[in-house]
Length: 273
Image 1 (cartoon, rainbow, N blue to C red):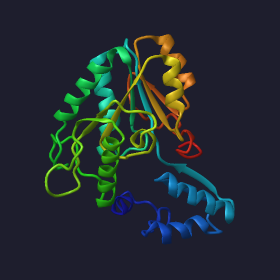
Image 2: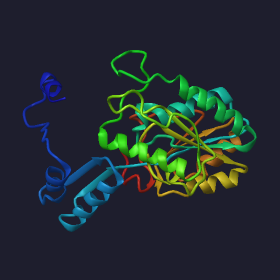
Image 3: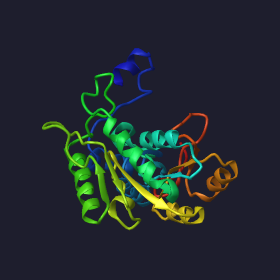
């Protein structure tokens, strides 16, 4: 990035790159009395620390883009093939390491079994391997710590009674690769339903009524994004108003443009990007 800045002939001093670790360099920036603004993308826990540091020092402006546990809601009248594909990409994009990942897939009861079956087949087809090969769909997790954290969430899901449909283990014998994982029969009180896994783990929930799924989708500490899949415009408009999410997509997911603000409710952060 620094070499590209130089190649683009930015004037000296316009862009300054300071490398370091959060507890040292990051903390110094957050507490510095002569820095007026901090923008941070990362975990919710660190976002709390930065907000606290700003409040204890010069009340600098803070923009936080933090975690998420975004719902994808599939109604019975949705285009099944399209909804399965979109919900798959909503979660597995970038190995699941995405703040607005659709990491809670709610499916109406009457189509639940078919949707789950198709989602499992879709996950099994996803090629895991060398990210520099053009046909690879999923590379490794970012580091060993995150790799082990994701595997611990998978074990937690199994222990709490969710049904492991596919994946759930390491891929290969080296590197931080995890097989695309799908859970069925997930309940709202399970750890994989409440906490941000930040990995290739798709929990699929069942619901009966729209009023029920609205309450369950909003029952989270996060509110960054949401997806709705339906052919009924009235239902789509009602859900977009009812869901506590900064961005709500209808019959698509992860479409982001610089022309519209990006932000959310609750703990994904504050301010709009």
